[in-house]
Length: 274
Image (cartoon, rainbow, N blue to C red; front, side, top):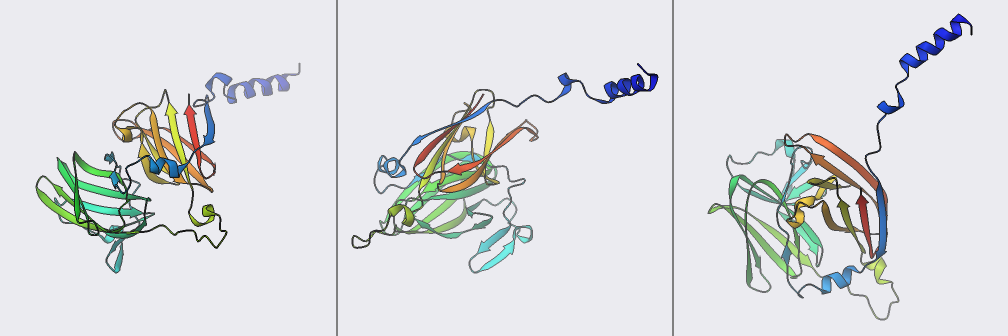
C-alpha cells in the first residue's frame, strides 16, 4: 500500500468517532388507537355537575403568557405587576391570561392559581343560575394548573382564598351547546368539535410534564400518582404535537421527546414509551 494512502486511512480512523460513541435511541415509542366516545365519557359523570381537577404543579419559566387581559384593557405580561405577596387566579386561553371568559358547556377551562407560599387554598364556585356554592380545598404553593369542566349553564364565579386571605375572582359565562335542528340534516360532528383521548404510559420515565402544541397541559402526577401515566383529552380532527419533558431536581431538562400526529375525533390513543 502506498504511504500517502495509508496516511489517509490512519487520519480517517482518528477523525471518525467509533460506533460505540454514537447516541443510542431514547427508547421504543408505539401508538395504539381504538374507538372512544367523548359523549359517553361525559354521561358517566353526574349530570349538571361542574368538576375541578387536582392542582398540577406549573413551571412558569418558559410558559409565561404573552398577553394579560383585565376587562377591556390588554397588556404585555412583562408590563404586568402584581401586589407583593398576593395570591392570584387566572383563566388561561392560548397565550393569554384573563379573569373573564366564555366557555361552551362541557368544555375544559384551564385555571392558573398562584400563591406566594405553601398554604391552605380554598376555591369557591358560585353558580348564579342555580344559586349554589361548591367548595374545594387544597394545599399548595407557587403556580398550579387546575382544569375546570363546566356543566352548569349561566354565569359562574370562581373565588380563591389562600391562608384565609382573599385573592381575586374569575367570571365564566357557560354557553349552551348548539342544538342540531331536526329539519336540517347536519352531521353533528361538523357542529361540535369532537374530542380525542390520549394516554401516555412509560416504565422508565416518571415525573414528566406534558406540553400540547408548546403549552403546558398535564403531567405524570396529575392523577395524584407518580406512575409514569398521564391521560387527557384534546381536540380531534387536528394535528397536534405532544411534548414529554422530564426535569431534574434543579429544573434542568434531562429527558425530552416530541410526538406529532393527526388525531381523529372520538378515538382513544395510547402512547407507550419503553
